[in-house]
Image 1: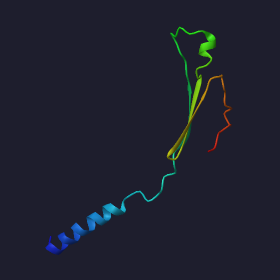
Image 2: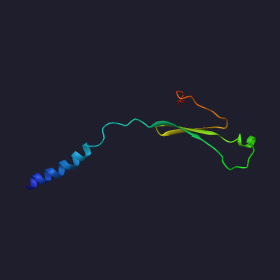
Image 3: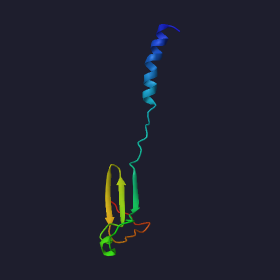
Image 4: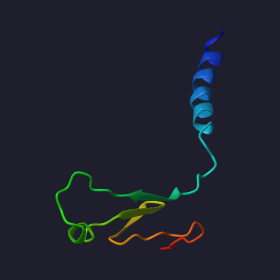
Length: 84
């Protein structure tokens, strides 16, 4: 190969690599995670345990998250969502 072809090859390879990047923007991550919290082995009365949260809901949208905890048994319907 001649020197001009080698130079051309070294110029085109970085351009080709840069153009191979992902051109589609990915949508922001969105999801809801529900946790059920239990306190096994505690020596507390039922009335004391009722003060502690039983469920924790984490809602994630893009770079933001929101936490909600419930001391009472709170069940969210499958189609019920909280938008923020």
